[in-house]
View 1 (cartoon, rainbow, N blue to C red):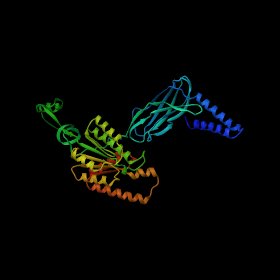
View 2 (cartoon, helix red, strand yellow):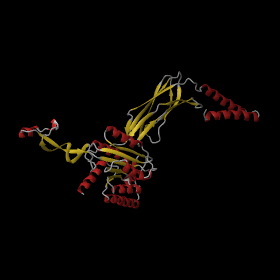
View 3 (cartoon, one colour):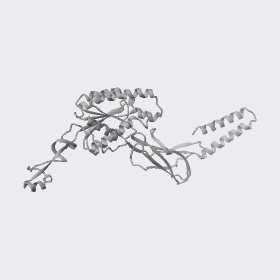
View 4 (tube, rainbow, N blue to C red):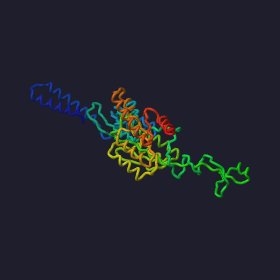
Length: 423
């Protein structure tokens, strides 16, 4: 029973009372009779217990989509009852999902055994797991006096992944290599693909490495030697502190940092280096260095599930690196450098046996896109402060990529690496 039905009941009672109090006042009795008639009609159309509706949902995308992808959703409604139904259908959506086209709520009149559809299009501006549903179906009588929920169900889950940029011309690798194979050129002879020299055959050499042309010339078996190729460890540290994030839910520095981490993980793993991950946010999550496709999916899972925050201190990051992660690794911090403590942590680790790089999405560029206009004095002060932080990091042999997140990461990274080689 809704407010309209309650109003009619009160109106009928008031009409009876006033009609008795005011002698020969047929107007109040007429009002009472009209209200009672409406009540009788509404009681006749009150939903019975035999209502049955079938609901199913489908989408044009798989269960994994990339951020800002548009997803078309179709909800199929079939009336299984033996009479027409007046229904309100609503697909419950999370607050961060944006409606692009159509609507997730519809009121429709569906005939006996009839099928209808509800169509809409959404996009997901943030990464993570997204739940659509449940679908709620309410029966409403034609006079809208009664409503009854007759179906709740049909949930659908999507995993929204960050955008991965292909960086084929960028070579990011640690200076210190380990004993397992990779693509980093080693100064020693070993297993690899680049030819180094020819030597005499030794028992145990592989048949495929015999240089038959040199063997025929020397009349003695000769073997090819190759330049060794090894790999190393790279640790990605993502700054997810909420107080340092600049921007809106759709466009912010954290989103740029997550996209950069996903792109770097893909590029570095493709070169057969081991990649680890530390995400500092509401919780301190980490992935120990590893290789392979499954390891990449594990990293992507952590990047899409973490929540920004700041309950963990930066000492936790240093503790993880020093006690659990391999020494002499390449540390790549991805941070807008808006939290002073984060910069101090980078400086502290630069003094130790780590090779450190910083990729910093410029929060000022993000803020300009959002606000449009800006205060020149405030912007000048901020640029000076940011420049001082970057120069301080460079003074400790830390490579810093000052990156405009509105542009691809590869050109900025390539330029800084070329400058490092010249230095």
